[in-house]
Length: 81
Image 1 (cartoon, one colour):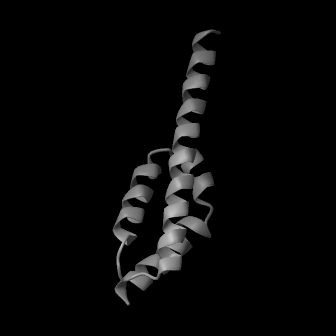
Image 2 (cartoon, rainbow, N blue to C red; image 1 turned 60 degrees about the vertical axis):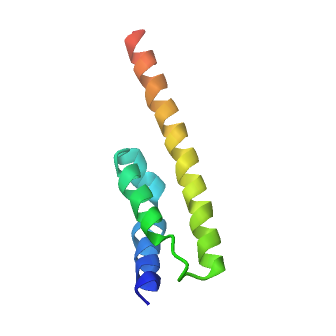
């Protein structure tokens, strides 16, 4: 039951509240989101929820890479001005 409650909180806090918008505003939030995802990995969750968490983690990882590339590109563009 505890893991189900944590899963529901994760959905509310990160999925329904548009985590990607939050990450754009505060890229450091990525680390707390990744930590929350890691805590949710449990054999007590259904196979469907574990698959969903894996997919969300994959999206977060890709978003983190893309965001870092965007930040680097902006810094390079600013340096060339």
